[in-house]
Length: 454
Image 1: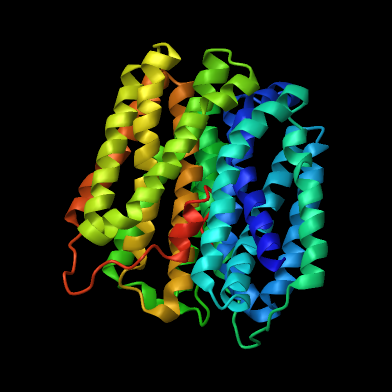
Image 2 (image 1 turned 30 degrees about the horizontal axis):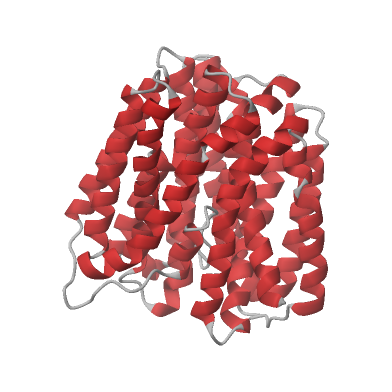
């Protein structure tokens, strides 16, 4: 029963990651949000998720993963109710921010419990990952079904699941706290402030103008937060990023790869949603079904990557994945105006398979040379980079689309990011004496379509 409960919680996070994309046009029209404001429905979730993920990992140690699981599930449910009942864009964005914070606490609690409650940890992870992977495909389809009634149901559908998780956590989940664990709250607040300022600055630059006082003030504030974050990390007794991780080359390459992943195939769901619904007028259900080939090929690409990594090494597989992604996204750039079956579908299939290769291989590479005692923290650093990049990328793509660029330009930009990822991975050197390990828990979590756990 505990494994089932943890798998359901992971299914919820995976579902909520993909369900909102199909609902974006409907909620934007209902609440009077323009394109620049609507992208914050994604960014308002991604930034706090990334910013507080490391805090969640430390809190799981300090108060106990079981207790944190119950509190985070309840918080996620309350935020979902607020989002489903939102009467304005501001309330909805506040609810999404709260969901992001709750997810940042829930995800490390889930993996912490998997690591302590089940002797056969790898088997538990495989079951949990398979259930979570189904959430990605279910999210895009269920989002289309629910949005036919109202976009509000894409939030309210979370409520019974969170109630089940909270009650089940009280009954079945137990964990031990580590009282000496420090919580890097200051670093998280500074880093989150810098990311929010950067995304808001890009948004204001596209709407109010780059020389507007609000734009300049926001960008200066973001720079101030970033400078404060760097200074804090150098002097703090409890830094956000552990000093032992800062000089591991494979981890630095992995961090860059996760950022480029979100700048390429990681943002594809958002761009395709806008193309199908805003440009072509697809109803929500049809748009959700159009995503199924992409979601299926993501799962296929992930399934074959483990064996490929063991044979060829993670840098080679990662470079091949990014190269295929560039080809698929380049195809979409050329076929943005073509019919779905003959134009978009081949690009979706190719980029979807590449997506599966990339998000497994980049976490294997990122954790390859990290000592066992720091694997959890390394996974959190990689995930933080992933979701901060996602928030900034979506803001930048929205800026391009709101200007002179069309969907062909958006896909071309993501293809360029994929080419940069291929070049980055090609430069990473393998160590023949140390073969790549099997995909880590972080990579397993990535396969769910939800943020990998700490």
